[in-house]
Length: 360
Length: 263
Image 1: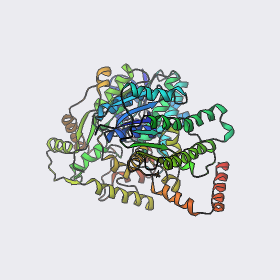
Image 2: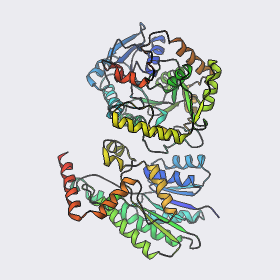
Image 3: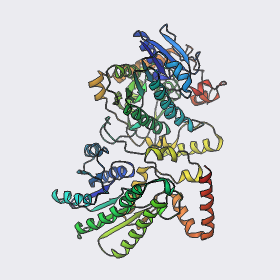
Image 4: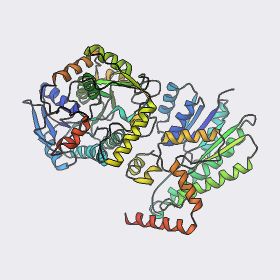
């Protein structure tokens, strides 16, 4: 069977193309550059040049495909042009849905995020729980609006299943959207030494392989129009770094930075970006989020999709091994110059290709 | 002291939902009111699970006259006295007068004007005069400024402004505190999320998140503030409004109208 994966060079998308190709599907991998370094080479993977913002290219890509996995998204913390979040995540998703409706696509899985719920109070969020705050983070806001687009098409009879991964980590390139990868890689280099606040803030970490398997299960077993949280374990910053220390064998003295200092710093970064246009390291809307837990419950996916959660220590060990191992391999990640952040990599690339790539 | 109970209208979404969460966080029991099939049961169960408060809810259409009595009959059956009333339900729009139907304006006026007045009346009738009762009327900065394409909405909010200010006079010295909330733009409904994020500069700075507005509003209400204007930029605009001569304001609004007409 022929399937299309959008965002095939993204953190989830690229692993998904590999998993599908290994399972024997004919995978069309939508990407904006067919020689992109993150694109996986496999005899069952056919790179297709295209862009979710251009419907014509989507129609060509979907030709003959029975299924579409729409993982492409703008998932970075910051974009020079803030409209790109809406264009890529909302208009792009609408384009994919519209084109799928016109071609022979039978079924689609849409990759959303637990960010549509965002902060939690006491108990982990389930699919039925409401969002408790507004949407100051552009990524979360536009992913929520994209879910509404999906719901509209489902009402018109289209078969779409939505999956909501939490903070995904695992064996994949360290990019701007791979926040856990950045943290782990920074720690291994001895550069990340910060624990925000008292370190007791909890987030949910989903292992990439689990999330990818969850996507395929959602396509095969998911109920049309439903959402499935694809999460992992709820882990505090303190536990995160204790586990990282255990699995990596590297011991760093970590510094706990009070939240009000982080908030002040984020405001200075915001001002810096406003005045100079330089990419910020951290923004106030993310500092605000550090006051909340982000706990999510994957029970529904476990029950209905046989979703499996890899123990955090095991997943983190594989991630550490991957990042250590990929240092010498060419994954298109250039060695950082001192004082340069990974963000800059995305904005300085000559042909602007990397800047345009949709990561999760 | 026995726990207080708050009635919140339009509680399922937007600012109403934020009021529910804010009050639950302050250990105030809730009586949530919203339209049927607006996910109100899910919100109620979420709040029960995550906070230690009692949550009752009623799914009803507040443009029906019978619905006002339904709320208080329900409370009486449950032997609950309400101590706070949050008149939040309302219907907004952004359209030229002739773009909307007569039925729409009837519904808008009923929900924005008739409902809060009658709920206030019924709330006061059941209030326990031995303890302080609180009423929060959600107005709008639009009730203070002339805003094109908000002709009826703005007029309903001007009504709420007059009604609230006048009640404050009448109820002076009683055990009832009544506050007017005059927010600027709030990031609530999907279409507002899109529109508000295309704004730039000062206009963008007037927009707040619903949880910020709810926190500031409940703080103000419990302190007995007469008018609550969340956001420093919004307060500056109100100050400016009181200082500028009418002719200058007229000019600003006309220029604004022209830019709207051009777009």
